Every structure is written in structure tokens, then in C-alpha cells.
Image (tube, rainbow, N blue to C red; front, side, top):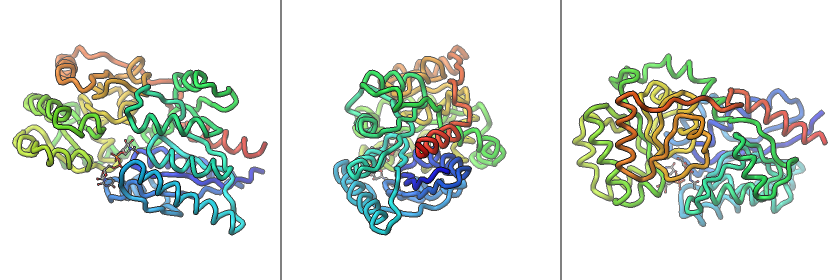
Amino acid sequence: MTNLRLACIVGARPNFMKMAPLLKAFEAYEGVETVLVHTGQHYDKNLSDVFFDELDMRRPDITLEVGSGKHGQQTARVIERFEEVLENAADEGKPFDRVLVVGDVNSTMATTIAAVKLGIPVAHVEAGLRSFDRTMPEEINRILTDAIADMLLVSDPAGMDNLRDEGHAENEMVLVGNVMIDTLKRLLPKARRGDTLERLGLQGDCYGLVTLHRPANVDTAESLGPLLDVLIATSEKLPLVFPIHPRTKQRIERFGFSEKLDAAKGLLQLGPAGYLDFLALSSQSKVIVTDSGGLQEESTVLGIPCLTARPNTERPITVTEGTSTLVGNNADMLRSGLAAVLDGTYKTGKCPKLWDGHAAERIAKVVAERAEK
Ligand code: UD1
């Protein structure tokens, strides 16, 4: 029988939908004990708490409450506090055998560093993704996490190639598929049964959905302003729904863009949405404009056109096989992408292999089997 005490890490919004199916999948393995650790990188109710209820995920067993801060500060706090958790567990005679991390946020990298330095091996879900853009904090997190994790669980074939190029051995990596899509497939019927569209006065296929939060798009007036201008102009033809990330909200206010956004009648500004509302919105939209990593993948599975406001992507399969097009931080490219969607000439895509709703089961099997060896 497997005997495995596994610390499962979440920190920021995109981690929750990946960890929820993993916790469930491990329940099938007697002898595997999961301990859910929340670093507290995201702490707002609508960036964190709401997901535990909606994803039907148990509350964290341990919280580190690190909060926001500069990168060094936030990362250091996670390392310091998680190291203590690991050491205390060992002192109490209940040491962790392995740590399971997902995605590419600061909490992913920081907990990996703390664990590996104490000799505790780390499995990384969503390993191998590379944008080859080292100005992105997430790219640094991905590279560092994969360099020291010993189990690299990969969502698409390009990720396997990237890891090979970085010198990883075949026995370190497994193509398991996309665990975030497990959650999407499970909750899509429920999301669509809800009254999200009605509440917002929207009709399916008659609106666009916008999210923007990457520093490269929102941190300067020069990058954010022109994107907002295209969206405001588009909203006269196609209503747009814009759930606004706290970071983006602060910047909009700081740069004095609130007034022109408020004046755009077709642009519906919301706070960050919960998972079910958001899935209801994304799955029934005509087009998605985003700089989110996860949403590029979700739109591909949903078959919804996605204009990705980034110059590059660590998820190239969403462009080559899926419905995404990179429009960079370029207002003209965004405008012409939106025009192609509106005149019906935008491409169609297909769903990548192993994005089938069963990735968590494959991951649990690999992790549990490794523990037996
Ligand atoms: C983080 C991740 C990013 C992910 C995103 C999803 C890193 C480097 N970035 O970015 O990959 O796509 O989460 O949302 O890990 N804030 C709040 N409430 C909160 C958390 C943050 O208001 O609960 C505000 C704070 O002002 C904070 C800012 O948002 O300074 C940024 O938060 P932070 O966790 O540093 O990064 P995100 O931009 O959310």
C-alpha cells in the first residue's frame, strides 16, 4: 500500500481550480494523506474564499497568510513560513514525503525552494510551459520550479519538448493533460444552468468578455490606455463584460481612465467574478479578450474565439490548435481580431489531446505509484 503524506499548495486564484480535482483524485488512494496549504498570496474574498465553496474544495488545513508585497518580499515570506511548516511536521513525527505544486505563481516557486532545500521532493503540475519571455515573473517561476522539482507533470507536448531542451531526463516527466480542464468539464453544466446572464441582462453569443491583469498591459498608461480605447469603441457594437482584477482597478484609477470607462454604456464593469459566474460568462460569449494564461486554455476547450493580449504565450497549442490569436499589446491587431469575429471570418479550433477532464486521475496515479517505489 502507498504511504504518502503530501503537502498540496495553493496561493493565488488560478491555483484553486487546478488543485480541487487533484484533492478529489487522491481520495481514491488509501494511504495517501493530503494536507492543503494556502500561502495567502491572494486573500480577498472574491480572489480566494469564493473558490473553495464553488469548487467544492475543503478549507485549507494550514494557512501562511503572506499577503501582497514586492516579489522578493512575498517570495521570501512564503519560503520562510513554509519551511517552518515542513520542519514542524518533521519535529512532530509526521514529516511530509512530498510537496505538490501547480502553475507558475510566486507561491509555486517559493514553496518548491523551501521543500527541496529540506530534501523533500516536489511534483509540479503544469510543468514545462515556457513563453521564453524572462520579463514575465511567471516565466522565472516556471524555470526555477522545473529546475529543482523531480516530477514534472506536463499538460501539452510542447512542454515535454521544452523540458528535454533544458536537459531533463525522460523519467522525470509525464504527459498527463490539463488538470484545469477537469474542473471546467465538471462545473460547466452547473455554470450554464445558473442565472448569471439573466442577472447581468445579457444574451448568449451577444457579448464579449474581457480580462486584463498582466503588468505588461496594465502597469503603464501607455500600454493600458490604447487597449481600453479599442474596447470602449467595440462596446458600441458588441456589449463587453469586464470583471476587473484589483491590480487593474488600481491602475485605471491612478491613470485617470475611470471616467471614460464609466461613460461607455456598452461596457459592463464588474468586480472579480467567482468561478461559476465566470464560466457561465466565458462559455456563452461571442469572443474573449484576455491576457490570462488559464483563459487561453479554457476558451480553446469551449471553442470560443480568444484574442490574447500578449506578444507571446507559454501555451502555444491554444494558438496552433485552439481558438486563440496573439494580438500583443497592439490596439490595431486587437481591433482587426474583433472585426474578424464580428464578420464571421475568425478561425475555428480543436481541443488538444488529454484535455479531457481526467488529468487529475492520471496525476494521482503517477504520484501514488512513484511513492510505492
Ligand atoms: C498573480 C500571479 C499571476 C496570476 C494572477 C491571477 C504571480 C507572480 N502572479 O498575479 O500569475 O495570473 O495572480 O490573479 O504570482 N491584491 C488584492 N487582493 C488580493 C491579492 C492581491 O487586492 O487578494 C492586489 C494587491 O494590490 C497586490 C496586487 O493585487 O499588490 C497584485 O497581487 P499579486 O499576488 O502580487 O499578483 P497578481 O497580479 O494577482
